[in-house]
Image (cartoon, rainbow, N blue to C red):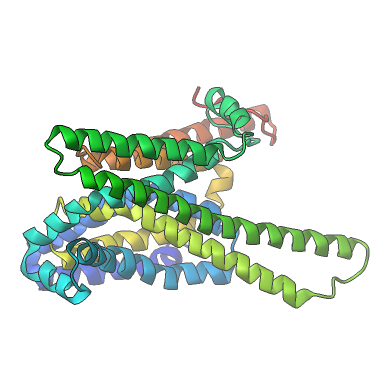
Length: 378
């Protein structure tokens, strides 16, 4: 099971490390290994959240996620994305950007650093919306009941998540402008960039998430209709449309996963520049890490880990919220990547420990049920 799920990840790891040795010797080998570990640690929460979405897909779309999705994640976010950032920020062509990355690594790093405010605002808003929509939803199982219970009541207010996100974005952009003004106004123009990028992040979340939710609801309606028809000993008569709807739902959920992965990748891509400016080593290291995130996602789905450890999804979403805040803070202040990675690991480890305690408690009580409101971790 492990070899079947992680086989490709193991193979890519071996090829990537060998390529690193040929490219830059054992020093390059060490850099790629460090980048791989960095990517996995920063993206473990990504795998947990992905698993919650991927378990709704059939085996075919899970394979698409592991093949086409990997190509998008590895080549799109980990290689093309840094080049696109430089091309846009420096107003040069992609080919010139690649040439700059290969010949003048310090200038390339500076250009990417200059583009960080817009990247952080876009990714921060996207992730913040995911977190807010999660905590404002009334769930049967609650991890931190003392916090989630009142938030679920507040969540009954329409558009509350979007309003809070916009308020956070305005405060962030105004704070950034104030800080820049105190330093002579050299970066005041970037406050507008932060605002626009954040709004684009919100729009992206609403479009992709909205389409995914729409087709998912349509799929559920079709399944309920078929179930009622079967109970009445009648056939729906439209099996093709039902299959087509399932395909649409799966496609938009796949699209949602890719955008989610891209948002999670922002901190890893930017953090990689603290280790190396070489885009070849970055692509190798982050690409290996991305493979493990994909494999880990599928492993969580096939093993039913999320069903056994019910608070893992909660912990991952709290990690998303923390990452969103960290991304917004890094617009003005530098935060060590180790801290970013540890926050997610600690929250997920805590939720896992709470899940284990819950399972032991239920086993001791001899019951399979779960109270509507759980205060594990309180």
